[in-house]
Image 1 (cartoon, one colour):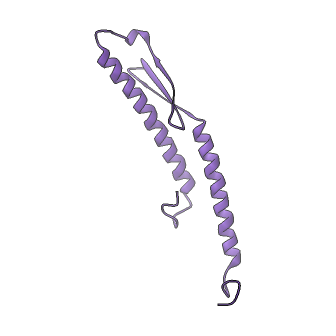
Image 2 (cartoon, one colour; image 1 turned 135 degrees about the horizontal axis):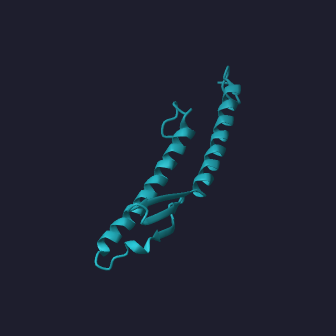
Image 3 (cartoon, one colour; image 1 turned 90 degrees about the vertical axis):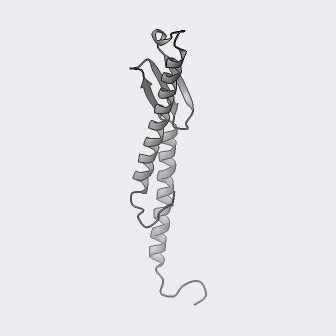
Length: 114
């Protein structure tokens, strides 16, 4: 091997790969910021309980219709709250997964890169 690198190598190809990697990183950061600023909402009980989760998986609001509050049936209210929260988290996870799959679309040769 000659000093300074491989003989007969493809420096243009390596530069292309570096540019693609940098673009992918920029796209990933942009997608991450977009997801972090997105709210994911889910309702349960026909809209009686609504939970909102941010893209950073933090709860930003929980709205409970006063008509669903029954002191004799607290368990139902708890179930509705859990359903709304879990639904909002699932929605956030699904959207994040879709965005990651879209970003990884052209990476067939690099499994597990992200």
